[in-house]
Length: 337
Ligand SMILES: [Zn+2]
Image 1 (tube, rainbow, N blue to C red):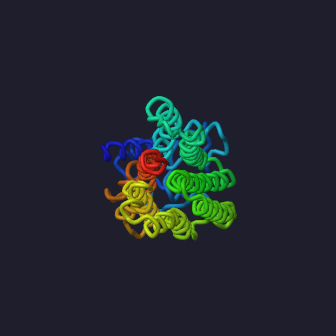
Image 2: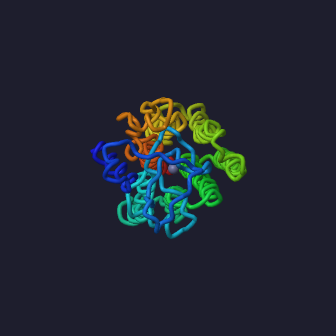
Image 3: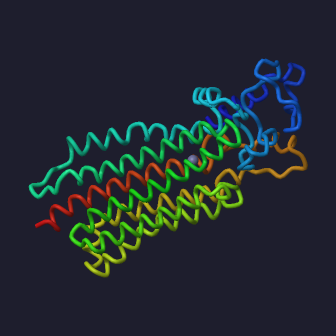
């Protein structure tokens, strides 16, 4: 499957190779070569890493399958219709963002048990704010991955929106748990909510800073989001001190929160480490020889780190949903009695 797709991508990249060069290596061009226009016989959809403009270069372990800079929203939008190295990144978040909110709406209206001690519509709104945050985060991510081929300016802005979506998701996730788990402890509840909003604001300021999206800050970005997510440990640790480990575990749905943390953190670490695509990097004297190595570009289209990160984010969000549902039931069955 991988090799078949790989060869399709390479065929597409080299579809204009003439018959007499069929058995030879692809002719390599550089960013300084004249760029073929869409109508020229040299035009082809996808590019190799070394052919990209500087602003498009991000992960040199991914060698092929790039959508060239389009300078057109419509052309970038049309890239949804063919396979390239952002396709999986786009759809792993576009599909969940399109259905998650509606699933949550259906669940809270038709599946969720409503107790006699129901506290009012804010309980449903608490589920909804988490659903909206998931939808927003994943939609922003899909928009970014679709439009990153547009131009440097649009790609940079999209990148900031992508990070902002992550900040919103983490903020709403943490607050949703605190509102249920600390319902009977108003002081602690509002202190933890305020602290989360403060951390969220700090992350937003960094996220919107122009320096932040530069490649140099990749490890810093991952660390910041991991630390923000880990600030969710604070209410749990305080709960253990106040209510004991067993009660807190039930009250906060800790087993699901731990699983959520494992998926978020391992996804972010893989993203920062660019694993597994770094395993396929072949160091050769020239680009030509390295592209001929069968190992090169094995994860370009399927299975590179960013795609794994996206899938892990979806699984982690689902774990969070399970924790939230558990907190809701605990509130009604044990706290409000
Ligand atoms: Zn992404």
